[in-house]
Length: 156
Ligand code: ADP
Image (tube, rainbow, N blue to C red):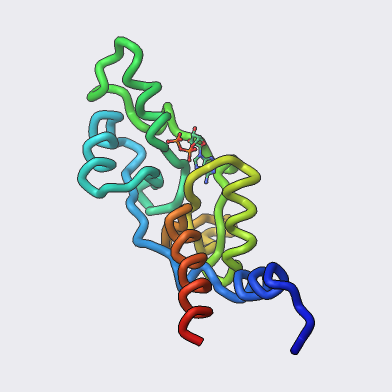
């Protein structure tokens, strides 16, 4: 018997699980897309957060459900407002990496009070660092990791 408490064991397991094992497919829109297009994409793809990319597919921002609701409360024509003017813009977007632990990411979601993060890979072009979106990590993925640990315990 190791003498470890249940929460120490849980903490250790959660630290060992990584983003790449639990991440989902990212859903992106181009910066020129309208707020109307973004609402349609969010419904059709059944996600709560969209990542906004430029023509070179580099991450430039993020839009959430509430961002789109807020934009819809005004009297603007939603088809003529680009998402790029309502999004949360880089460098203010919190991101994560495939090798990050699920515990680290859970702490970021709670700390920043957000629902999800883009999983990114840094790429250097012409001496500049850009972020390529390779995945999506949400509270649902954290819940899946939680259930994975609990189920594993029952079966072992
Ligand atoms: P919702 O607004 O639908 O409740 P969130 O809580 O995730 O969804 O988003 C709250 C605010 O934080 C929004 O304005 C959104 O643009 C912003 N946001 C969402 N995800 C991130 C992130 N990963 N990094 C920075 N800001 C974010």
